[in-house]
Length: 344
Image (cartoon, rainbow, N blue to C red; front, side):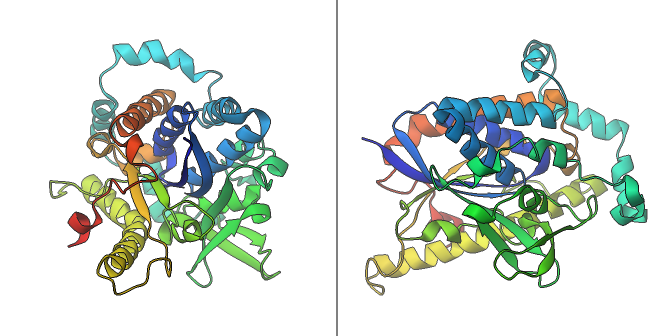
């Protein structure tokens, strides 16, 4: 029996390679159908690549295209070449710690404090553009396959803007991943209003946006691929640790807000204060590896080295396997994330 699910893909720069690994493993399950995807930043790129790849060659086509996209992000010809190297290196978290001890503040961090991406003049080019332009947007925007929703933040209003279906473009994906201290705001004509608007990273307002997945025609199950740790057991003390935790909290806030709303609705339904069917009784699942992500930092999000990307892909595959082994039977049956424990 086919299990239909929705995917909610978080953003987090190079850490999105973890989601690449999750999707690579998930696409091997022939009895799981992806009905809709909501993605932000790296999650938007992953979602667009998955949909275009499926149009080219089904699940295997999606795996191939995801590989190609992340090879381009890592700026190497074949990331598989890093596999044998990874076996001889220490865990990626240890490598990250060594790098930060050698260079506690990166040149990019310093530049962000004293310069603006608007000072680059005619030399400026969004670094994601060469990657995004390789996607076939007729396939990304096709009505066939999973629905695709991508979140960005409207700079002028501060509100979330979710682009769906035929509204998705290369500019929309770049807008969803536009960190304002590093990239110039992405300006595009909003198809809904006809007005030219500037957009920043969607992670500020929806990381990822869950509400597009609440439509009645979609399945109740939402599988969230979370790459920003929800919890850290230690109090950050160094400047790097403090900045890293601020980044994680700010990029998790919108997700927690929507999960709290889901929890509230589920409680009303359970207590009989809301008629079943009046609102969607969402079944929440999550694939994550907080233990690994706790060893990484915000610096590694903007340094997509082949070793980092390979390690995160393998970690994503392992996390997805753990989820499938323990929770696949619960899909379309019951939630596997305990929202009461999370919020009460």
